[in-house]
Length: 153
Image: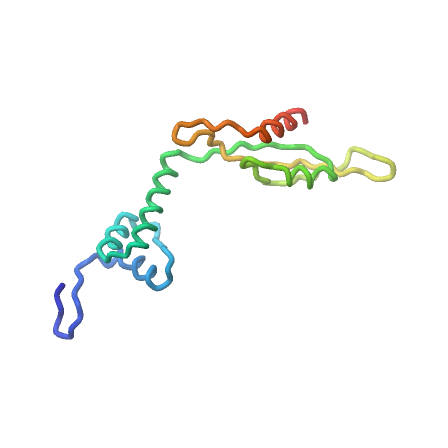
């Protein structure tokens, strides 16, 4: 590299991609603006020989490639009807990627003794991605049992 008359070194690199490098050195976190190409940041990290940053950028590029190769994420939604006393058990036993989305009160239709039993619709969702690299994943035994129970509701 060349030095100027003040002793400063001239590094002829693209300053646009130096920002994420400098911030990584300051904070230890990889922050890349959406406008920047990750490959450009990778080139700079390799130029400055920052091995930990090179690994992070390569990992991010690989994750983004995997995400785009899988296509858009689709979701399956289920609406489950339950009574108030069943609600906690139902939500706590959800498994295999099902997650709670919304709870809708539909009032009460049952009257046991002097107390009305509130009823709810519970909306749950799951990402629809049954294959990874062409390998179809079978649902677990627990999932099959829960699906069977849910189909009876």
